[in-house]
Image (tube, rainbow, N blue to C red; front, top):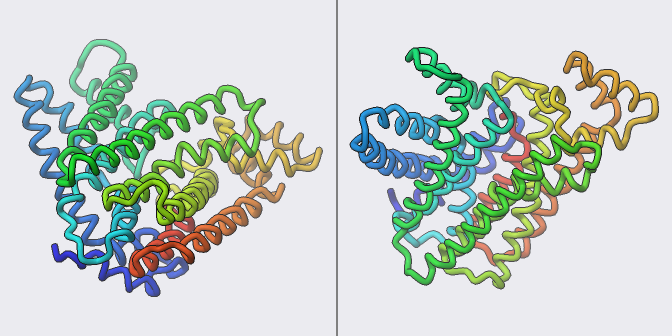
Amino acid sequence: MANDAVAGNATRVAAAVPGDGDDPVRAVLAAYTHDLVTAVHETLTTFLTAEVNSLTEVDTSMGSFAAAAREAVLAGGKRIRSTFAYWGWRGAVGGAEPLPPVLPALAALELLHTFALVHDDVMDASKTRRGRPTAHIALAEQHIAAGHRGDPERFGEAVAVLIGDLCMVWADRLLAHATVSPARLFEVRRCYDQMRVETVAGQYLDVLGENDPVSWSVDRALRVARYKTASYTVQRPLLFGACLAGVPADDPLASAYTRYGLAVGEAFQLRDDLLGVYGDPAATGKPAGDDLRTGKPTTLLMLAQELATPAQFRALERAADGPVDRLAELVAETGAVARVERMIAERVSDALVALDTAPVDRTARTALTGLATAVTNRRA
C-alpha cells in the first residue's frame, strides 16, 4: 500500500456526507479508509489463520471453536475503532510515515471490539448481530445439530465467553507485533489498558442499570455512554493512535483528541439509543425495540420519563408491558427523541470546535470532521 493511499482518499469528504440515501458512515469510511480497512482485514486474516491452525493442532475438536472465534472477528463490521486510531496517528505524524509498522496495533483494536461484542451479546441475551445469529445462539444451534448432551443454551453461552476471552488474548498478542520502540510500545500499552478498564467499567454500569432502573437518571445513562462507548469507540482509539506517534499525554493534540473523542463517542451512543428503538432492522441487523422491551435505562428512556407530563408518565408505565410500537410512540410524544437529536448535534458541534484549534495534520482534520458527522448520523 502506498504510504499516502489512505490519507489521499480523505479529500473525497464532500461526496460522502449523510443525506444521499446510502449508509453515511459506510460512505465516509469508504471515502477515507478503503485501503486501511482492506489492510486491517488482511492483517487480521493472516494473524488468525496462524492462530487457528495452532489451536487445531492442540486437538481436532478445537478447529470448530477456533473457526467460530475467527468468524466473529471477520464477519463484517465497519472497523470504526481502527479507523479513529489511524487518524489519531496520522493526525500527529502527517502523510509521509509508512503504515505497516503500526498496522498490527490498529488491527488489534478490532479483536478487542469482538471480545466486547461477544460478551455483550451474552449479557443482553441478544439473538442477532449484523443480521446474523449471535455467537452464543449459533453455538447452541451447533450443539443441537451435533446431538451433544446437556443444555445447548448453556453450552452456547459458555463457549461464547471463551471466544470473547480468546479475542482479548489475541488482541494483546497482535498488538505486540507493532514495530515501534519498546518505550513507545509501553506507553501504547498504558493507553490500551486504560481503554480496557473503562470498557469493563462502562459495561458493569450498563448491567447495573438494567437491574436497578429506579436509581438511574439521565446523568448516569450518559456516564454509561461515556465509559461503555465513547471511551473505546472514539476517544481512546484516537489517543491510542497518538501514542503510536509518540505524542505525550500532556500535548495539546492529546487534549483536543480527548474533547473530540468524548463528544463524538457520546453522540455515537445517543444515536445507537435511537436506532435501538426506531432503526430499521434490515439496516441495523438487530430487532427494533429491544431496549424498550427490557426497560433498559438508556438516555432516551430516562429523558422520556423526565420530560413526560403526569398523564404521559402514567401512559408510559401502562405501555411498558404492551406492544413495543406503542411504547416507542409514547417516548417520541414526550419530546425525548427531539431532545436526543439536539444533544447529538451539540456534541458534534463541540467536537468540531475542538478540531478547529487542534495542532492536527490538515488531511486528518478533514477526515475527522467528516467522521464526526457520519458516525453520529448513521442508520446502522
